[in-house]
Length: 444
Image (cartoon, rainbow, N blue to C red; front, side):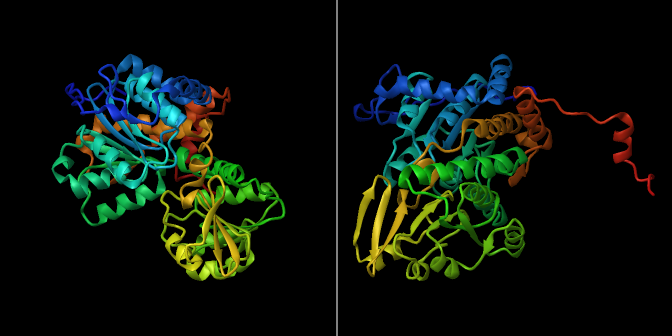
């Protein structure tokens, strides 16, 4: 791939203040503690060892500079894996401003390293409140990005709702996660989307691996770190049997749990049944389960009528992008404000004498209480991001303002590079076989 025909356009300055630690020698930023930089660098380098595909892409980007002069505004989880994506984009010639896509997923040492070691404008503080979250989104928007890179569609949504004059400045965007793709498709359906966006989440090397294997493992990891419960023999209810739900269900069963699925889609429900899981309604599950995990991307999946049936000691966690899947407002009403933190990241609500527990305030549990997906999985997801950024830089003029699939050539290249990096070889079809599978003449 060759670089885009975009004139160099340096990122405009962003004013800073002493309270956020701005200095003349550092890019504009707002992070918690720049003293954490060395710890962040160590962890970023550790993750890099598990990301050989992204490293190969970064080496090519260093040579070819395919993103030269391109301003990228990114709203992603600020983790070690994301840091390696940012490094790759910068080596490709882009100037970057990054903010967090979730208040509890930021790793403060990573944010510090991005600013002080890698020279990337970063706006992210773990535990930031809603006002700060949107201040950070606006700081990224203030850089007038030419390419957006989202995890949940918040940056794209902000530009369209509050900064419509900037929409025409954006050449294209990419979107990392299921929830963001759903929002973008709704925007496109309403003819509200002002530029093309590539749905990285829809790439096979993303959703088949990241959503299933990555979220499956990291959700279990997050729940165990927060609760230290034994999963063997426990009744686990998973709401949603998409790729994320499949991954969580598989890993929970592997840990010895009894697993039930709730669904609204009949085909997904049949698949769950055929995969050997119990399938039941949410109300049936509320009486049956011990641990409840949402993975739907929808609103109020477990709500008042479910809380009223849950047994004493029930635990709830969310593995969807937004903290909307558990109706915490209803839970607060039912508990009449009787709530306390019983462990770090675990709140206990008392409802009619029964103790109901919520992990990580209902936010994305695998990132709020653990470290998110293993780097080896994010290697493929972020390889798709990097190559999709290069693709839209080249082809944005040809793309309509709608949601686009990752080109198959990129998806296959990511898989090929991953196998190559792992030292695994596969067969190629013979000429005879290639002719056979493209022919209609052969038959019985």
